[in-house]
Length: 284
Image (cartoon, rainbow, N blue to C red):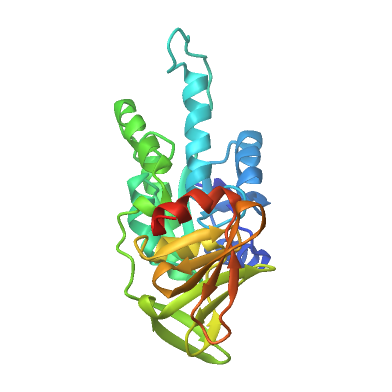
């Protein structure tokens, strides 16, 4: 049995590696590749593949958002809305294998009934096992799609899961984070972090004694790992630890800046959208 597949990943090297491993495993025809979630949705509707290897973390739409959009479109086509009539000859949704560098996403992947998930860097044996699982599911007559045979009555519950804010993730935040300082990977207590800032895609993490870089790609991803009771996104480019705010400085036109208690006493702007939250935090 040869199955058709898409590879969706924002890293060219990851796509090349997975394509090479699939060629060596055999039985999979990679019909197209994409670099982001928007391309994923379009390519799935164009090619109707049996299987999609889907990166979890991508710009625009992440892997879970892709699933949500596919499910929303699929439901509209099959007529789940009030007064809608089902259309005939609707293409089934593809099987999904998630690809990620973080195994914390594994449980959530199975919450949406993905066939499997692969951790980066990819391993040939695991790729082969995942492909065999897909073939077994297809040969066994299991219904196609990311719902993987979940009754239609449960799709609403899946959509609610996918709509859940990142801060509501059931994964407990780690007490420590890994911060790269030159060639060293340091474990840092969250409480010691003063703030984090993103510039040209690089996230800088600052404590009172040193600064380094996070492996996270976005501040949203970093916030997923941080204690929401301590950390606040004061500005689109900054996340601050409220316990390390040294001073609130009034700025022009009723705006504010935060002076932090790091070595440089860095001043961080508060966006207008977050000014109300600032006032709530400190009863201004």
